[in-house]
Image (tube, rainbow, N blue to C red; front, side, top):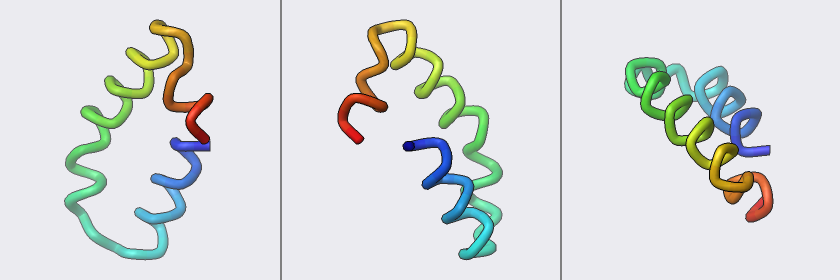
Length: 43
């Protein structure tokens, strides 16, 4: 799933940029779920 992939990337890369954009990622994920889970259906 998309969120798990992001978490794994953040954990293995160590880039703080991903953590800084965490709120944006959460917003995009929540919006997709509200719109029918498009991110999850793509995966």
